[in-house]
Amino acid sequence: MIKSLLRNFLINYFALSFLNEFFLGLVIKEGLVGIALTAAVVTLVTKFVKPLLKTLLLPINVLTLGTLRWIVDIINLAVVILFVPQADVLGFYFSGVDFQGISLQGFLVPRVISLILTAVLLTSTKKIISKIMVKTKDS
Figure 1: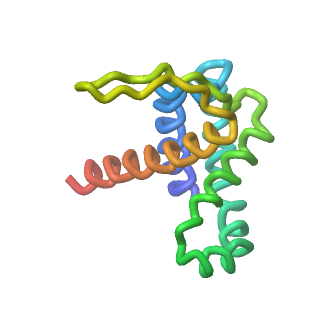
Figure 2: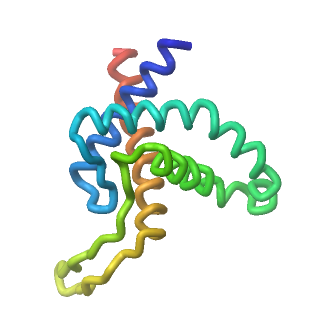
C-alpha cells in the first residue's frame, strides 16, 4: 500500500512538474513545495475519490459506452484545485501557428476548456511516465 502510494506520488509529481513547465493553463505556485503538495493531494484524490466517482457515474459510462469516462478525471482535477490553493487552472491565449501554408489564428482558451485540456494532458502524462517506470523496472 505504502509502496503504491509513493510510486503514484512520484508519477504525479513528475507529471505536474512537466505540465507546470510546458502547459500554460496549469499554474502551480511556490515551486517544488507547491508541486509536492499538489501531487500528494492528486495521489489521495486518485486513490479515494476516483473509485467513488467511477461508481456514481457508472450509469452514464455504460450509456455512453465509456466515451465520457474522462469526466471523472476532470472532476478529480477540479477537486484538487478546490483544496490546494497553490494550484490553479487558468484560461490562456493561444498565439496561433503557421506551418507549411496551414495557418491557425490565435484565440483565447476559456478556463473550462483549459481544465479539460489539463485533465487530459495530466492523465496522458501520468500514463507515459508510468510506462517508462515499468520498463526501466523490468530491464
